[in-house]
Image (cartoon, rainbow, N blue to C red):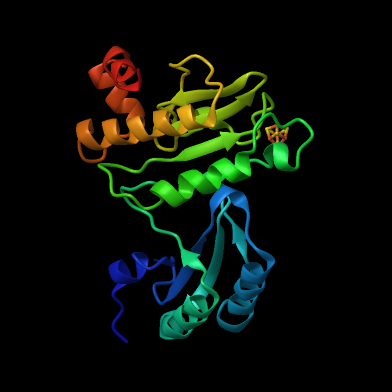
Length: 225
Ligand code: SF4
């Protein structure tokens, strides 16, 4: 059987070390999946995987060991259940979030609701490089927002934003550039301006932090203001 690994990757199936096996990445925002979807993921893992599910460091579910010849059957199950698959590459990635004020007694902001709003607006948007967003509900910083390109942290008076973080083969700590924002609409506006600035100014493969180092924080600040 001829395998087009690149085409399968664009549909969420990532070729494993065993070339005839694929690991399926599912996509959901804010680290939260409906139980119906989770049951479907278990069904896929039991039927077509090795009865195991892996949780990624960015709160996504991965179902490994799917044989190439079963990809079509798995896709059918996915489309019946409405589960979306992960899209990698140079685009806005899934939004990571801690439990936030909807659940956690320390939460200062509703991270679930904000994650969904950001995800629905931007997930999958094509950009010069990947762009990761993380939200955390309070100073405990369970979602480690300084390690993402855009981070939002709940504080007593609103939202503190961080820009330019990344953690991988390059590491850069995101920094707060704006004062604390009191309203959610201002947060969404700042994220919108940041993504547009990134789309307009970054070169291929350049993460937001490297762009900020190259053009200078002042130019970026003008965009935010
Ligand atoms: S960061 Fe704060 S609000 Fe979020 S889960 Fe951790 S303790 Fe709770």
